[in-house]
Length: 142
Image (cartoon, rainbow, N blue to C red):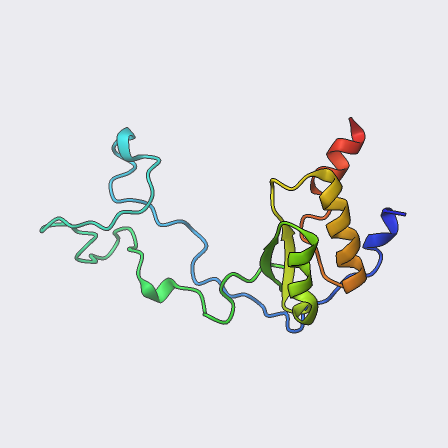
């Protein structure tokens, strides 16, 4: 009976083509020269003579607000939905009127028994669950 739950899928109200202005990560200046900053995240160069800060030609690009995602598409998953974390069946009821905009994501600390209840109720309410098969398939195999 559990396999039939995934038969009918909910489609998002509007599915946009998400445009990324830049796919590469912004690397920290001189991170290729020093091992101590090789794996660190982006930091803005602040030196008075810094070539990167002064935006000289041929230097690494600096992160700025122009690379930001359009507000309309921010936090939208590739499937076209926005995420909504759910811990129990009662929280799932909130998505009843918004099932074409939001998809439920079951929290990581929810037990197998509660997960099954959430997935079955979501199927009744026609709500997409992103991680519906998460712990269910791994614990059934054991």
